[in-house]
Length: 239
Image 1 (cartoon, rainbow, N blue to C red):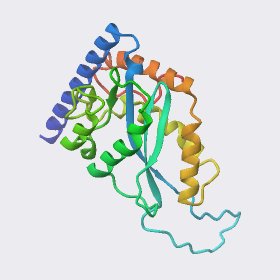
Image 2 (image 1 turned 120 degrees about the horizontal axis):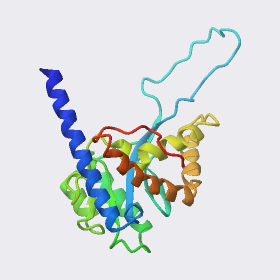
Image 3 (image 1 turned 90 degrees about the vertical axis):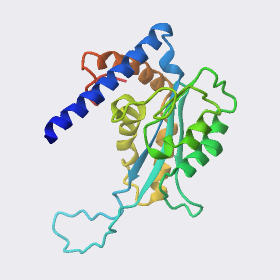
Image 4 (image 1 turned 135 degrees about the vertical axis):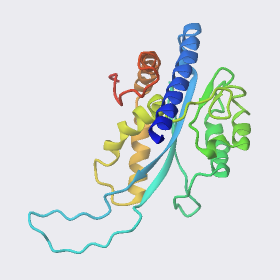
């Protein structure tokens, strides 16, 4: 019984993903540059696993105390043809990581994101986000509609973003994986080192690369149709 129900839910999700692909392809047919008019956004939890490691040819017989919860930071970015907007770290006044709730997310939108769009005409742009509750609460959608009225791709937005579709958002299927190895390349020993690496790598992503990734996003929409809405491979194009 559970297997039948699970298969039914999977089929429903795939159908909704195909419907989203159909909608996107219709937009691309009317406007080949449609993909370049979407600002994709997402958060990621970057865990610092390099706090204290001992390397030796022999067992040093050293007892290492470790924290029950590893140090980590929560970072938000937006991705569009002009480059990457961010990073923004969700933290308190003491620099300590905090959970992302609706109030903090709205604060980030107003105090960090809006100023970076001050000189940008947003009338033709769309904004995409996933279905996290902090993103989709009515007050949050109201804040986003201040600049993206009826052009928010999100649960409770004008266009419904399909759940379990991290393979379709540019940050999940490209950006986070692209910078992960670079961020940890020099084994950051503190959260501040980790955050500094994240800032450096995010700001170093070439604009040309962002533009190529967005062009390939349209190809992913094409590939979604023959897959019947199934999830795509992590990497199916070269950037």
